[in-house]
Length: 280
Image (cartoon, rainbow, N blue to C red; front, side, top):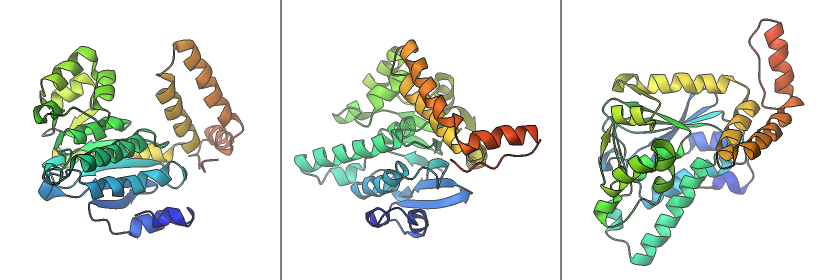
């Protein structure tokens, strides 16, 4: 899965886009927009071990080469499920130590999604349960179809959320609501997800991808260094007190002052034309 990493990153994206995955579909539906589709519709797009490895193999180089793609979309195949979480049929066959190692790898993969320097959008096209919801929560923001359903139902299986759900959900919906949803394994609707800030917008199923692509194209058209630095500043600044965060923001801002994109952006504005950003 990592042959485009082992020999350096030159041409890695072309190799990625031409590679045939077993559990994922990867394409570029718009210039510099990478779309990753979880492609196990017969299993409600649940994660198995191979899916975790394939997703890791995609997100790992994105942390290093930050210019080839400017936005990432994650969605699920079909119209019933975004992702049902871990594949319990596979897990039924795992020994205890295999379960532990598998989950540690899943968590590492999720951290790569969370720490991806370029924006990642979830297009939640159906049920997002367990690790599926946790994956969506690791993304920068999410859109959902009206028929989407959500739950962190792990405690009903004798486990607990372990893909970041106990950390990301409270940060989005607040501690008390997160406790209700997690401790009672309580499902919620797309409208509730919208009202609570889990998703940014809700669309009819047939409009979801078109609307997600529209915002991804817009992000991809903007100055990529500026977008990355703004994401970096928001993500890390929220972990600090406000004064430290503002100092962090200044450091992030100053990196762009000498950039070609800053010069091009101001010049294009004054020349009343669209800027051509190069990410440097």
